[in-house]
Amino acid sequence: VIEQIGGSVDLNAGQFIDRVGVALGLGFPAGPKLEELAATCIGDVPTIPSVVRDLAISFSGPETGAQRLVAQGTSPPAVAAAVQACVARTVVKVLTNATVRDNIKDVLITGGVMSNAYIREYVVDKLARKGIKIYIPEAAYSADNAVGVAYIAKITAER
Image (cartoon, rainbow, N blue to C red; front, side):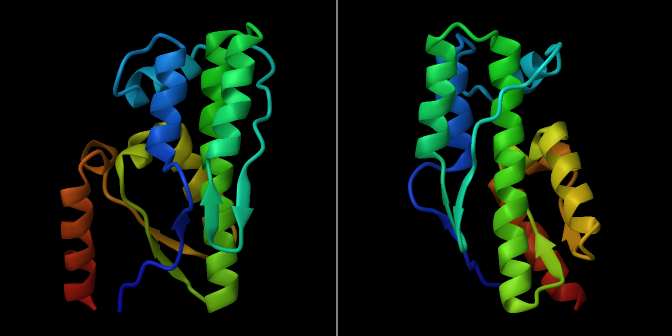
């Protein structure tokens, strides 16, 4: 049985990334350009706190924090890297909560944000260390949620 057990109470991760990316002048949608910009970050990456309560995510507070960094003149690559790191930590937190609460060992992750190499690698690495099996389409297919739905069907059929 495949069941959604959590999610965002306000912005989704893609909206968070797009809003901050647009504030950085990257245009819309901002995901791929934000990833490229973050890759050029040299030096310290500011911390944008992630907000997870049980299985509920909130990105409105982190967006406010990121927008504050932009307004303060923090370098655009550092802001971009901070946004990526916040999303990655948030995904790991909520999935850790879910796997502990419900004794889940298999997790399917789809959606455009999961095409981001940093976020993918961070999430897969951290969850694998906890013994959680991650199912994730190739990055090229993560940007299309229709592919995520098809991947769910494939996994279900294989069981």
